[in-house]
Image (cartoon, rainbow, N blue to C red):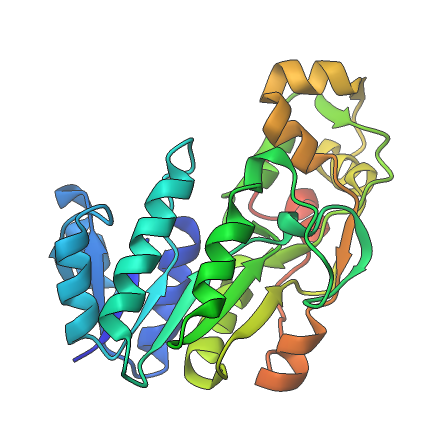
Length: 282
């Protein structure tokens, strides 16, 4: 048997896969696209072709697994229904066992906060307003569940920070709003630790403690060149209101619980460094 992993071809999931294999785990990756099979196999996983919406397949694989890590999401209007149905199928399959289920959340559900912790109340923007209800069902289960709520993930030139790859760089909002962030390699390590050590109903914010302002990020990306300031309305028009409102949140988090309980030690370069001299070259 092995850990069932979804999203192994994705930005976060591929890092989780690397960390699991590196720590000696066997991984069964549920992969939708045949053209991604070779890459996932070369990363050390055994591949099963299928989709997270095939609940009969999900149930069978979960039953046969040593536990499940879920990082895949459609990222569109179907996310709520797909995530809820997937989690329900897995929880039913693992019920009555001691096999763990690790579910992916996100720090945006907390809304604005200067020191966000796992005990804070949710104040989710529209783009993630569906998450709390799904998480509540996961946490209410008798299954050994853990939720990891990543901050804004960066690294390798991928993810949300690519919005700063414009010429000239656009500064949105006041610029004083902070982003809670985490390097993708550090996040992959957190998933592995949380799967191995997470207690019943564990919840961890995946934030490194580096909380740069958007002004700092835009300045790093512009590398001394001119920037364009845009209004909230212009950002809404350019990125869509729901996504823009999430990026305009002012969030700071330290990830203290994961560090103290799991021994997580994020060490990746900061997002400012990555934008200035690293993988997000203009």
